[in-house]
Amino acid sequence: MAVKHLAIIMDGNGRWAKARGLPRVAGHKQGAETFREIAYHCRDAGLEYLTVYAFSTENWKRGEFEVGAILRLLEDYLEEAIEKMVREGIRLKVIGDLAPLSERAKALIAKTEELSSKLSGFQVNLCVNYGGRNEIIRAARLSAESGKAFEDCLDTAGIPDPDLLIRPGGEKRLSNFLLWQCAYTELSFTDKFWPDITGADIDAAIKEFCCRSRRFGGI
Ligand code: IPE
Ligand code: IPE
Ligand code: MG
Image (tube, helix red, strand yellow):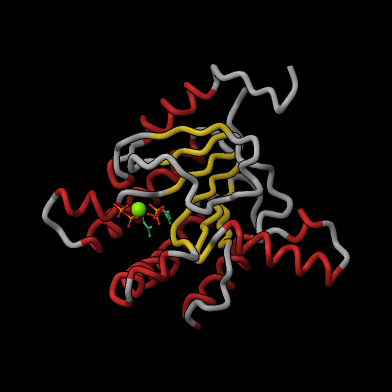
């Protein structure tokens, strides 16, 4: 069975930096580079969707300095990368509770959506201020108000559930990522930190996934 939709929890940036005697923010910077490389790798590998966890609804706990640095990196990334990614055939969608983000971030996200709407093919979903519980509550409210089906009110409406989820960084938990969508997703964990992840690691996880027997509750 092929992987159409890959989800990644991009974890371990801080520890990657600490191991090198660098500030945590240097790990986030390197993590953004890794994201860029892995996005192209997934496009070239023929995947349809890549969904990455960049900033959670709980990550605000980290204090103003680190939160500010992560959000600025995301904005700079969008500013630099959108036109290039779109030119190279990568659709970008930003997912999460976007209301508390800065005006600059919101404007960049709107521009991303506009440019991406003209494309078809490989899509990257970047989860920012995303939490599975927050998404479910927003979707339940929207569904009750609009009468639309619950799944059509999720941030991931129209996107198939992930086939495989990879979490680098050594932790074996979901940390509030795609709680609804991962009901039958296969899980893959590695101790490597996110900034050290390469296309070969992704290929190895996909290869191992292909040997698994997905039963979805059947026999
Ligand atoms: C993931 O790396 C990035 C974000 C959560 C924003 P961490 O910053 O969680 O890195 P560790 O887990 O502390 O090493
Ligand atoms: C999950 O990592 C969030 C992102 C990678 C964006 P965390 O580092 O926040 O998760 P915990 O705190 O280890 O569960
Ligand atoms: Mg972490």
